[in-house]
Amino acid sequence: MSDLTPEQTADSSVVNPARFLGRADVYAQARPGYPDALGAWLRDLGLLNARVADIGAGTGLFTRLLLAHGATVTAVEPNPDMRAALAGGLRGVPGLTLQAGTSEATGLAGASVGLITAAQAAHWFDPARTTHEFRRVLRPGGRVLFVWNDWRAAQESAPFNRAYGEVVRAFTDDDPLQIRVPEDDLSLFMPGGFEGREWMHTHLRCGTVRPGMNAGCAWMWRSSCSCCPARGWPPTWS
Image (cartoon, rainbow, N blue to C red; front, side, top):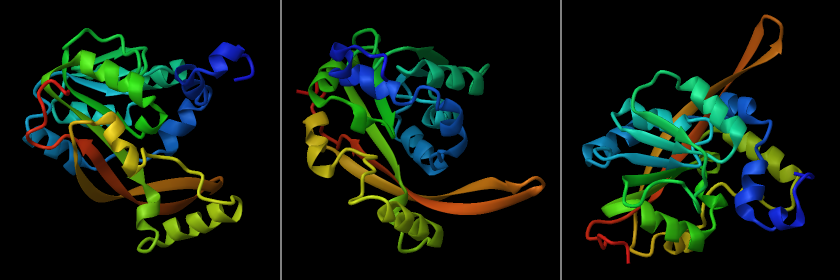
């Protein structure tokens, strides 16, 4: 990020995507996916019937779930390395369109999508500019879904999560891992109200200890979709 101008360093829509330059391969290998039950829930509610915009799609971990449950998806991602990884990982999968853009400037046509999703991404968004853009691109009655995986939620029941938490705290004064929008700030993005859902799932990650020998570790995650607007939500998102 040292090549950014002073004006660019003051713009979160420039700085935040730049944080992940050169990290797409590691991101794709190490980050967990999302529970199939979440995709089935969206499908059964009819939320995947219209086009979905997956904002901050990264390497396509959540995009993949949406496509697997029959959605037609425009994956919007500002980071060129992430977009390339997404395109390579989902090459040939029907129903996918990929484009550069941010939550504040998606590049989508007005009133063009029925559902906007952001998985492990919304904490990077500017609330005021994002809300303005989401209002523009959503169809009447459209909805927004924010999703997070949070390993900290399972520290008491998963030994690996607990041990990892101890390592993190040993090297930090506080918990620095901002991985979701704080509960008190959700209304900045969802002024019409929201409902929450949670699923527990396990992510198995294997690493090479030495040639020919692998070590496996099971992470337990709590997937939350905390911002799917509740029934009766104003159709024009006022």
